[in-house]
Image (cartoon, rainbow, N blue to C red):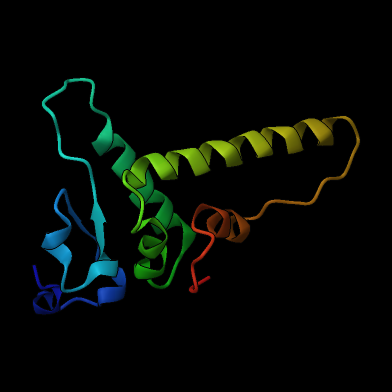
Length: 123
């Protein structure tokens, strides 16, 4: 699939497919998901929605910088969930320290985004 034909800014386009070949012309615009195995317990679309929502709310200028962080992952949505879970645990710890009167370093949306996709050049 060639997204240059879409008449859209490539910095704002995400191609979702289970085959990496589908976005080989613009590899950093693609997100390769695991193929659906027919299981009714599969939550990949819910995870994908959370991933895309996080990108949208982070205000990132170029989605390719984010997707590049997940390009080598076998399961990019699982990697995203791991990072998000780790950040939630750290936030709970920060809130507990605040309740005890300690003043830990703050966590802002920008640092949150950088921690979800740490190698991103576009932050």
